[in-house]
Image 1: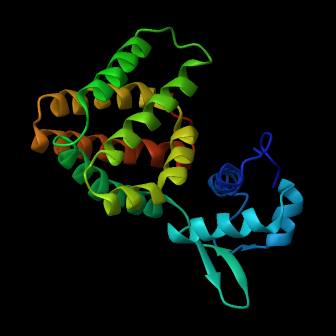
Image 2: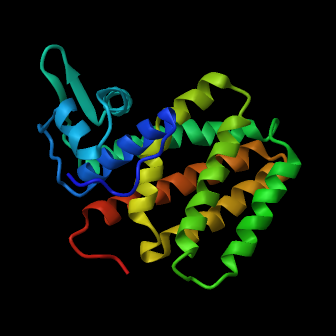
Length: 227
């Protein structure tokens, strides 16, 4: 397992960085189902102490990618298309409800700002910097909905999957124009929220995540790179 990029100095951010490194190794099949994740070895490889390693493994265990066995350590759980579909089904349940509820809570000014930046980005040339900015807009959109759904517990449940989903989105990138389609779908959700149409906002978010499920499966597990 090789470290990918410089580690951040902030403790919480460092834990997220460690999570991303382990996820990348799982997505590329460097770590497979049943493999043991040894804290000391991961710490040496990634150049961090055992504390962020332990915290990262706990975070991965909370979303079902790692099993922690007493007196044995952490083990990678089987990971494939079935697990991706399960993860996205959880997102479908949580985030469609968050979008439905957000129609009564989210501020119009925040929605319009994300809407404007998304529309402007769609009109830009697809240069090397296009995808990172699209992913940043993607993250802001989903966090805005979760933060303004009117339920702290629902927002926290969505947050448990945040680093995992961000890593999956980064792996998917814009294959088969996945990210372009995604942010167009964001605009549909925003339109419904601006119209205070909670039912339509929830349905649009559900359709968005359902389509994203297949894009993630294709990107991570298809033997042929989808263009």
